[in-house]
Length: 588
Image (tube, rainbow, N blue to C red; front, side, top):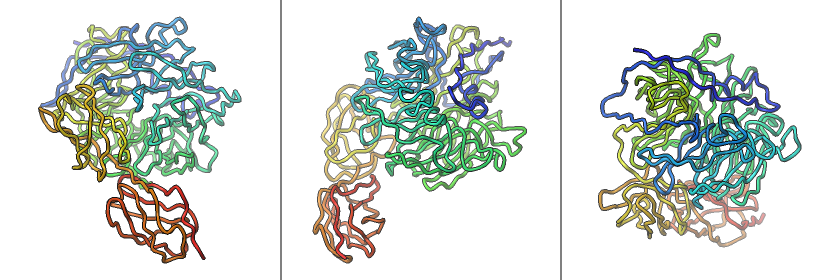
């Protein structure tokens, strides 16, 4: 028996001043454009996998979730819906911020009403415990906002875009990605429009000061319209994608690196004409794998014949820009991956596709770092669209080990009409673990650790070095990075088991002093600090690498190299890099 399904189209607001020939296709495919699809009662789930629809939205509590969830320190999941909620300004609601327990109990924390934003993107929980996010439109100037919201639901608009020089909006417009809290404590993000009409890179302090650091399209071969979230990599720089633009004619997006000060380097251009098989139109951001490389998706391309098109790709790219295609979607195994990947505790990557699969309603998939893809679930497998359809957002792995996500359509009432989307859980047999709100820090810094069953914890170790800690709740504790700690996994011993972190915690090096402070080439310099074990490079000004010996975790002996000039001394370790606060003076 088949049931005719109706999907409520979400309204699409054209980006002001933007070339819709370039981005209209992707904007429509991201949040709308689906009509009259079918649900057939056939379950598709591999053994040892359990799919559960936790809740369906009814419109007043939200509708059409398009952004990934995030786990809070209280153990609950937080997220947004792009429409729905209670609003006097938006016919179908301006969107919501929500809290969901791991069992599926929903609380609507805030309903947007256009003046404070419309169509919120994904959230990030900062070290101060509050959540930060952006809205795609709305706000004081109708071009989007940056906002802060407490776990209890008190919302503050920190910035409204296009406050500067309309209509060009030199401060940016139309943000379509989540923010990232960097190691300096500030929040960084992008807008898909503004500047000169093709997007910006910005920094905003928790105290609401916004600085535009880069305007896309001002450099040779740069991409346009960044739409995916940035990732701050182990080298301290940010990496991301643009939806269009690049170095070639008919180019369809880029992968880029950008420094915290705004210097951009294009690492790869997707070329629609010359190499359509390698993908086009990346919408989502990147994830840095445990191997140091970046992994991402394109929503289009993959078929060598551009007239036929493609269902999208998954790719790997090194920090230096070496590009490899891992998988080309065929439609039957998924199509149009609009969200980024996550790397789970088993080392594999997990994600969603908007369409494709057994019923063309989208999929959840797993792919190994080597490129072997497995379709874990095809939506539309349950009668009446009760399992949801069209997952537009990425997944999150909760510290209980399970995967959580959303679909833009579907309902648990057994009818596809007027459906507003769902939240689902997919259990694939992965064990509980611990994670961090920030994955790097220096000795003496407080680290916030999320997990399950933390009450009664007896030991916290940073790569084997025991740390002082304080249990705050069943799902949250804080720990102090101990002296002698090195980059590696964090473990928490609890009464039930020992939990291991899903990624390495990077202990960042510190330079406290060096002696002598002046001298010619071949001078022996003793550098003192913290977390110097494993140092891979000591670099003097003008990029001159020194020969050195690591004497201990707190001391390095280096020789001033020929050609060095007066400037800071830089030390590079697996935990990051640090420059001295003062300069070494080179005597001719």
